[in-house]
Image (cartoon, rainbow, N blue to C red; front, side, top):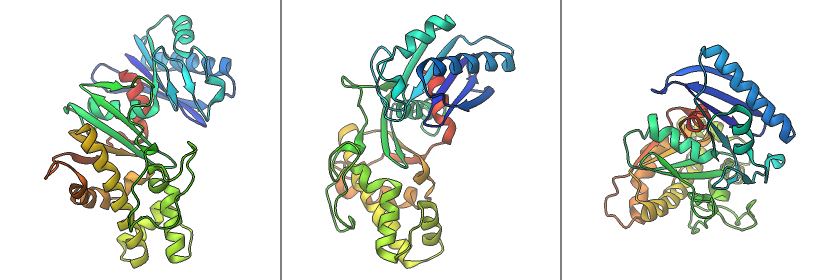
Length: 295
């Protein structure tokens, strides 16, 4: 049995998987607000899963948002600052006497989908998370690629070349730069575009629903979003040439993306007819902890 623990901004979720990826037990609790209590919560969750599953965990993986060093130390964790610089993997390993690995949450998402999710069986997989932020990760041959600076796959902080689909001025990104892909493809960008077009503030799901129902304003907003996404993903295809791109996050629920974006990105790709597939994540919100378990 292997245990995957996903530490988010508000909750710690854990899952126990057998060797074939079947779920044996799940548990969750609120995120404690200090380092010692977070370690304690992970120990308690592991014990609870072992008790519920009736077997011991052989290894443990942890998914954390932010930059993770090659020895499992969170270097930057904006929403979990008490973890920064702390030997998370080493301390939990010493406490539980089990192998422990830590990885970025986007890497865990992509690994989950590459191992037994929507991209299973493919060599090169790119995971793109479209939500409040825009994250990304690379998995090659079943191994997540962290990179020399622990930022491999962070496509959201590259600039998006503006076009007619970029409505309004470039927005300052949380990274300090202006005009990042994240500021054009996150949920706020979609809501901002609709507000400028229709004078009403709606979330992404409501806008997509109106577009599906035939509303012209919403359809225009979704169309512009698809164009921006196609251009951004074409850069990924030109650089990485993945077999599959898997979408996760709240905006991955917009059905039209999978029909329209692959027909648009070819105009910006070096390959004349890109064979890269665009698919929705199979495991959804469970991908983070499942990927942590597969570490």
